[in-house]
Image 1 (cartoon, one colour):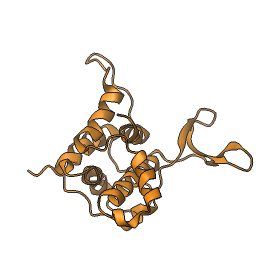
Image 2 (tube, one colour):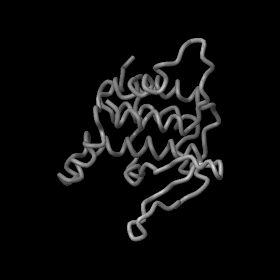
Image 3 (cartoon, one colour):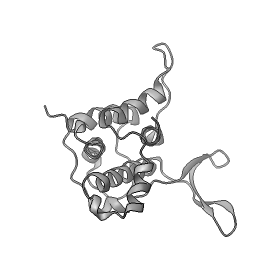
Image 4 (tube, one colour):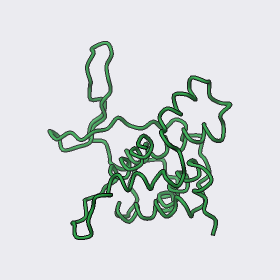
Length: 180
């Protein structure tokens, strides 16, 4: 067995996308696979280090992580962005699908790491510095390990399981990107 995730963060993340691709193919809409998020989390962690990475799709370069948050007033996920002219945060998108949050987070990370590791000549020095500064410790093995430990490290065997959904997986990926 070849452990792909040991080679680079790009390979690790791209391989993590493999069980999602297997669940619904390269369908470009944002429908969630017909699997529970908890099972997908285990598949994602396993695949990140054991599955062959998905072939890089140049369309992933256009993926951007969403500035999402939970809106308790509407009980939905929303996207907010800062309106500089009004000097305030505005809701730019309402009722955002949780799987779309995961997909945008993961594929934006794959695209960033791909640019840094596979195509650095495509970036200006300023772009490269910006992306590198978003990644505090891009070591493949530690990438997902740290996130899971951060998220679930104080859980006891007798604790009831925390609910997990697609946004939990996106949060786990985001934590590792920025947390040492």
